[in-house]
Picture 1 (cartoon, one colour):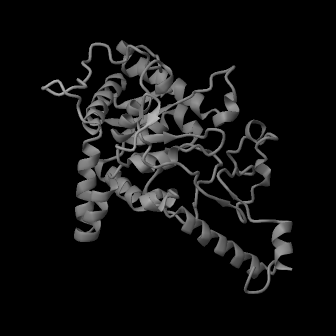
Picture 2 (spheres, one colour):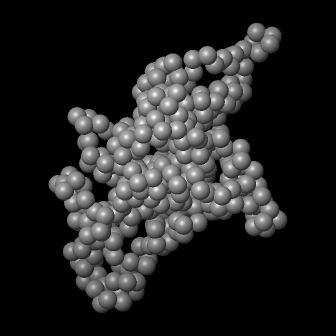
Picture 3 (cartoon, one colour):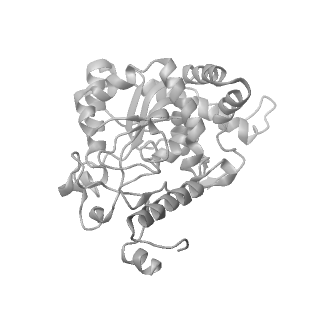
Length: 341
């Protein structure tokens, strides 16, 4: 009966769905046997966000420290929205945007030829970003060269914050973390070109891992979300840290796309937009007002991309809503009958 119909062609809840018939799809690159992307049916299946800890706590000697609280950037925005209205919330968002020194940020593996995955890993998006950043620096910041790495000398000539107080006692961990965040953001800004920083993994070049990464996220207006073995986790991470996602994932549907107004909290570009310069023209042309609107939208919808209710996550409820819609669609088509499954 009903169960037989569903088992014959089940509704799949997945983290990655590839539209192999999309005009921008690259079947030869992505639809390999290990992906099985032709098994995804966008009219039936559901793309849900991956599960990640939204506070992305920093690493201290390889150990997670719970003393650093989850990002709360969204709370002032929502408080202003609910108590004073949209105009007041946008004013708060504009101040937040003005305080972010980086215009565009991405760090990750570029998957050069010979590295595992190579073009399949991101459909060539990461390689295109590396080439663009090198050319961009050569054209606009020639004194930096065209390197897209931050090596162990990234902070050369910059004074590290002291780990002790004036009386010689150890600084509280929270104070140390905030000071190191500020320092690491200054390092990132120093190596940016016209506000853009696209570099190979921060954590793999002798440069400290978690703190610089999160400092750059918190200090960036827009962060690039390319593919990475499919869905990647950057969309969730950016939502947690208040960085407006720039999604460059041709033919890849995003989590809960039919429920969420992505145009209200994210930007889109294609791989072709990277080399053509359209990506940077879009980002550099964004007004403070538009960025504030997107940041406010991200504050309103961030919870939908998270599973943890203690952080305002509602991914579970969104999944149930889409399952309900799918069942209603199946009933309407006559493929499933009755009131219960």
